[in-house]
Amino acid sequence: MTQKQLIHRWAGGREGRSGNLYSDGTSIFYYGTWMGTRRGPDAFVLNSANFSRPTCKAQWEIRKNTSGVRHFVPNPERLCHSYPDPVTLAAILRRAVKVQARRTHAQLCRERRVWEQWETLRESGFLTEPAPAEWEHAEHFTPEAQAARKAAEDARHEAYYSDEAQAARAAKEEAMRQAREAARIAADTAELEKWAAGTIRRWSCHFPLPTRLRIKGDTLETSRGATVPLAIARRVYRKWMAGDNVTGTNVGGFTIRSVDDTSAAIGCHTILVEELHRVLGS
Image (spheres, rainbow, N blue to C red):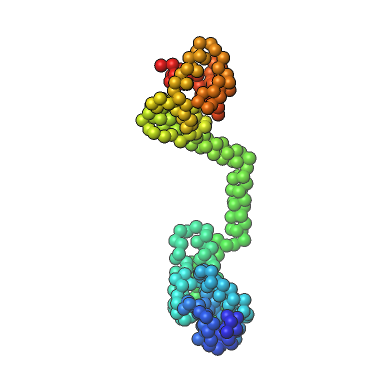
């Protein structure tokens, strides 16, 4: 028996089972969770809670294959018994209101929806006592009040998306980005200084920072991970200091592309002249 056939049997007041969906002739269940109750030939009360994907699929099948008067009841605790009596049903509705205690517009809307649902169930004979009057919020849902809230929301929306507000947010985001970048560069600079002093073994290369040098045994090491023989580096440095043209000279596999008064371009490195003096001039 398919789920569709079972749902039609349940709508006709008969028992049946299709996998984990089954009916006792009055109520229909999925994995033991109450999905709905038949209250007449064309009157049904259905569970409107949110469940897992298979259970929601079964709910959709039940809604699709039933017609007539249908009432949807929230079931926040996912009760796994037959359709509740009026006292239990009223308690379920009250718990649905107490899910959110803050007196926000959303909470008032929740109370209003439950109040309307309660009144509909009372008019249909499923409930006897009237809905709590404090949930109606008639003054909050008058056309004037709703128009005023819409106007206030439109004003907030216009103010939020105005050119001045967007410019202010962009400036704030740019300031925060620059602050983060400055903090990162400061931290990287401190780590780079430790690397240059030889107190840490490795340093993660960040290209915005200038290339640093250090002597490690008989090797000259750069902060970008390149190494050249220290003797060759010192010999080329002395030639440059003597006034010779060292452009095009190979230094341990790296070619000097250009040298000026501020920096030297060697391979993919750009090294400040003061850094060369600090390490090789001693």
